[in-house]
Image 1: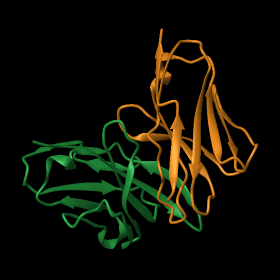
Image 2 (image 1 turned 180 degrees about the horizontal axis):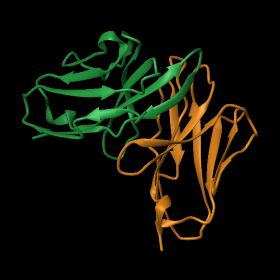
Image 3 (image 1 turned 180 degrees about the vertical axis):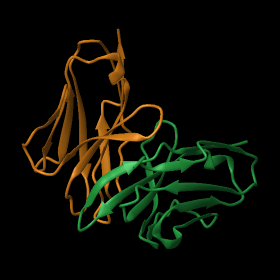
Amino acid sequence: EDKVVQSPLSLVVHEGDTVTLNCSYEVTNFRSLLWYKQEKKAPTFLFMLTSSGIEKKSGRLSSILDKKELFSILNITATQTGDSAIYLCAPPHNTDKLIFGTGTRLQVFP
Amino acid sequence: DTGVSQNPRHKITKRGQNVTFRCDPISEHNRLYWYRQTLGQGPEFLTYFQNEAQLEKSRLLSDRFSAERPKGSFSTLEIQRTEQGDSAMYLCASSFYQGFSYGYTFGSGTRLTVV
């Protein structure tokens, strides 16, 4: 059965710290992996990863995929209080529905 | 384009009542998805449409749940005889699918509370 496991489940840091969020997956006919940030409402898109070893970067956020080891990481450098959210990874199933993990809850304190 | 729109934002209902939610996808998108999210969990897939055809339903979707997408535009999700366990955030998403999904975008959700 397809599954996604994220770790840690929860993370509490101070502003300025760097964090690494992990996502491991087992999905039939893997094609891509999506990362989302969820505050109080809808998940908002961060990255789509399709190729191993190629880092995607957006400001202080970056992500990379390892298709051989079936995992992805999301890095956030110089964290800010506005980064506090739940971070979700989701590979699409072969029918295109997203399979979500439970997410990592990040809390950044000043 | 204002993204994926969901109405209502919040719904409180008594157990046993029927409720209906609406989702308006991004206009160019041909796929529309419904997910359910409970506290502390990631979203769980319920069903999806390509244009007006409902292509897959999760086993989570009991016979009290029905979804439609007439004319391949907006979609409705109806829950009959609501139960307290139906309390959750119901999320809609849409994408443009052509061999691969592009622009997978979520709406802000409808939070259902069954009392």
